[in-house]
Image (cartoon, rainbow, N blue to C red; front, side):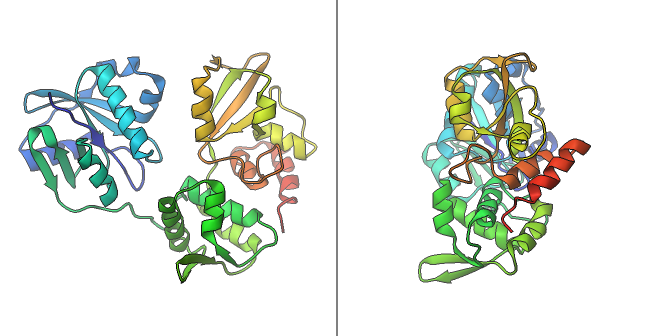
Length: 342
């Protein structure tokens, strides 16, 4: 039985198009592939629906699925493999995982585990068909002027909030504090240098960041590449531990720090790790706000960038609220900006 997976790992993190996939299969295999939406996609667990756009394909007589990754960030390879295996088990059909760029260590791990993958215009690995076409391994490139990755934005805000302000930093200390890996550290350094926000220097084995100017100047330079940390919001039947374990966010956090009135229901922020843990507990999700509910904002990075507080940091809070803010919220945000550490 063909065991396939598709890897879509874009520098821009937009899904690969059907046309690009069809063209590559035709150029490499001489196959005129007809992709069509898979009818069973609507019955998949929600976390798989959120992660993949699924296509059905007949490949050399085999019915297979293409799992096009629609997330803004590639998950850990172990998590990715589990998700693809779950999709295969649910569909009872081989799955190919698709991405537009694949680092050499990722390729090695997937090949070692015999996980088929496809990178349109670039790579195709289908071990059970004896196909291993490798052209060149494109590294995802950071393009100046694009949005910073969540990790880089979190690190940059952590720098800006640090007291006393310094122009030189041993970044590994900050990244370790935020729980990121050395691989993420490398990406953070590359992004900050590409955007002209910092200069990377090396002293022995340590890499340092040098920042010119004041923290306010750095914040203003970085603003065009920063985005709201809120991926989406869900409403849940409120439980007592919300207020004890989660940080206030959104209008609740703004009301705590300015004269703004409290919103109708409390708003909390959750990191990706906290959300995964919360889902295992089976919270009662609501289709819309209701009496006694809480709003959980699912953030792209940890909302705990500042210790010793029960609210999210003021910079992330500003980024989460300023787009589309009405006059009263904008006035409260102006008041909040006065609390920035400069």
